[in-house]
Image 1 (cartoon, one colour):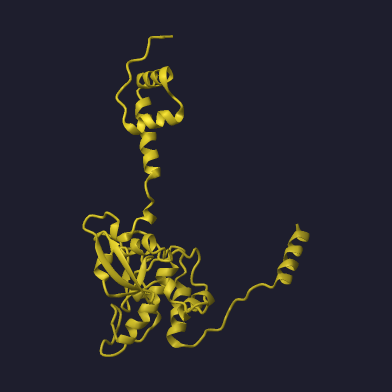
Image 2 (image 1 turned 120 degrees about the vertical axis):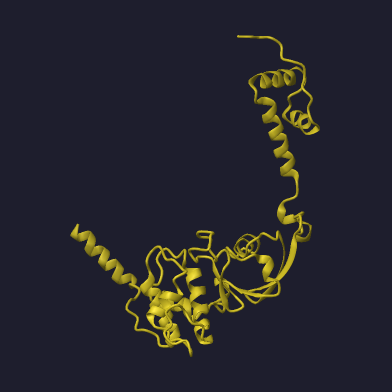
Length: 267
């Protein structure tokens, strides 16, 4: 094995010198460490990486930096009413509403699906109209009102559309459900305003919300689980104001225990 002495000390930064001191690598040991590390081609790089990581760890966390002093070049300030509460945000002008809701405000009920405006999972309501938050720049919403899935219920009381989705089992995995519900709520408002769809037969008055009308108006919201019949039924129930007969019930604990016992005995 080659025991040749290591080369002279390379030039180190203050952070690297401090790190070696903290690790107790001094004198001849430091020379051997640096020499053999450089001979291996990675020692000095690894040392500098450790030093930079240490400096980064000592820096203030993003949460400790005020929004107005975030260091964003060209940041814009917007004031948006989110679920009835005015929120002030300093944002990169390229930030979309979906990312502002999830990453800046912690409103993670709105889901990121395709991130291309094709699946509808990110649907929210802006000034009474549904929009795709993944395609909407947050900077364009200054002074406007946004309602997300978190803002539909009143405390512990569910919005009628949320309750109807539960009654009609209008979801399976639930990932698309927030967007489906927001879209359905806005759909009813659109119909009340008289907005026509592609399948509206008579555009002279308020459209009649047939199942075909609902399917057309909800076609931008994809449910990969295929819960469409339940979704249409839930919207029809809220639209008509007549609660459909419940076709399911929760199993009582005693009944569940009995069924399990019978299954075990059958095995």
